[in-house]
Image 1 (cartoon, rainbow, N blue to C red):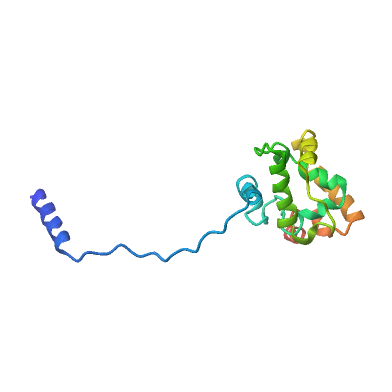
Image 2 (image 1 turned 135 degrees about the vertical axis):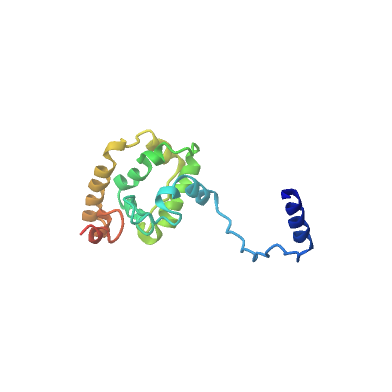
Length: 170
């Protein structure tokens, strides 16, 4: 009985209307990424966000802010000495310099001071050997930002990981 039921169901299904597969709309082509952009997506965007905006996570936003670190040698060095940069899986110093230049001048927008020079492979190679200790990152960032706010045209909001964080904590 069960076999005849299954056979009947198959015959009915075969004789019924044939449903066409749904036609999906054509997707626009994805933009081509440069090498530095691709490196950023692979190595940094998981935490800092695809467009450099990690808010409201307690991870520093890069978008329109990271370039402020370039107003002093200490701030500039800090960006390369961060453990995730210094110990990056990107072993080629020029590739890492190119990615960090994308971060500073691309994601950072107009936050880098005028006339700021891009990172070089030699600079990256030198600084990678002096990586910051993981335990001191928040304190190191706070101290550097305090000095930047006092000497450069850096907004007070840089003391927080993202704009509005001070209001969100209240």
